[in-house]
Length: 123
Image 1 (cartoon, rainbow, N blue to C red):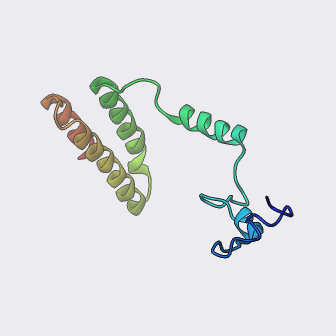
Image 2 (image 1 turned 180 degrees about the vertical axis):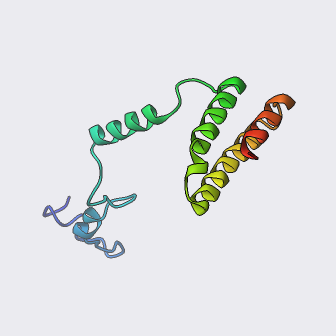
């Protein structure tokens, strides 16, 4: 029987080494807690915000082509009235929009759509 609360071995036991229990209890297993950890509510709020930013439905070819055409026309409208350096910059942006459309729809694009968008950019 142990004689006190701190003595965990028999008094006549000469082989067992006495361990300090306070040091073992202070150090827990696993990763130490962060000082700025998020609460469950904050984590859930961030998760819901990320889910809202995700697209709700899939894009199809027609939607992507219509969006690319509208963006190219928006970029190029009134470009001739702007200074030459700005006109060149805007035309490069429009060509970049065409390249994005071309890469995204490479496997399913229609030749007439490609010609039409390329003609819009090369004006």
